Image (cartoon, rainbow, N blue to C red; front, side, top):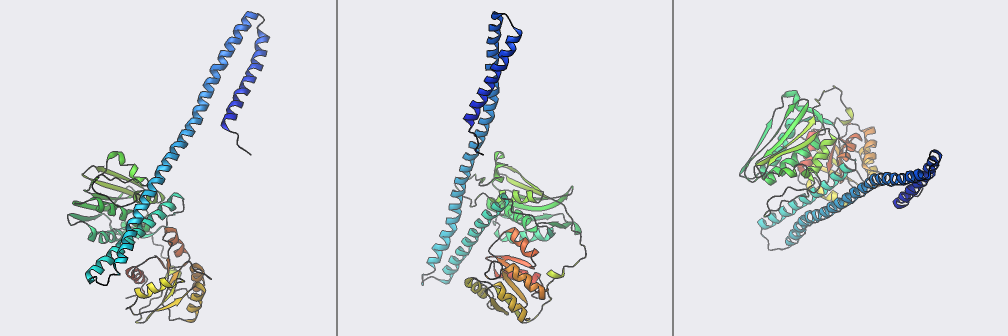
Length: 446
């Protein structure tokens, strides 16, 4: 049914009220007043009452309608500003690393470069590639959160190990004039909890990255403590600080608390919005305490859910205990360039590679060749995808370790990979150390 326009609705209501008022009020007045002079005065007052009543009624009606219009206009202007901010940010954050990649890749063609120059140029290309990958990941993360497609995936998490990993990761990146300290109050079983480790790691690492970026001297401290059935994390720095009027805004998209007009700080202004979204999914919260030029303290909490081991063993995900000199890895990958990358990545190691171009071929190879010690399984492939192939392989080799690899670097993709029977998950592009870390975790390497 077609919606009636506001102006027709408004006019119709006015006319209907007028006709009803005249019809009923005139009949009523004529029935109780016989004197013509009194009747004339009564009709005059009746008209004044009608004008006053309808004016009041229409005032509230119009105000309600105009409030909706103004709110819609405000949202449209805000949306337009956000779109402009997004385009400006994405343009800068994509073009800058791409300029480094393309420019220095072309410079590598110069045959007169010294080994030191080649190494320097390659480092620029790698760093620019990592920055570009981070931009793409942030856009995907905020999109998943805002569309409701990001879900928490709780697993056993060692908080002390998680924080120690972050400390070891960021310690080499800290300015020489800054000290980095880790403070944790975990006591034995209290530091083993059930939560989404990846989301907590993402929040903590983003806050540490920000602290390092905005702190040129002084100290950075981070850690956690158990408080009233909540885990309270903190990241404290002596950096540039944040103005009070920005305390809430910095957790919105594309808002960056940049204070020094002589220095540009890279970033799209999405990180803290992603942190807030992830913590809301976990039932937690995040806030900041800060003073300009004196530093900031970011706090975030999650519910305390202690890990209670059930004693049950999931035989599907328990890998074979393989400690052989010869190690055969089946790489299931339909893109030839990706297989060549993995082949170069593992060159010089005792690992023997077998290549399958689709899931069906992988299933056949695993059925025929019991020398295969592990599978590196791509997810999106023709003929049979990685999940279907994993289910098939599990039906006759339940203990064969299978590591999913995919270009879909999203949290829900990892959750699905584990639920479909894979032992672990790698997002492309990955490095040799990441693959070896997973293989060691699965007891595939000594």
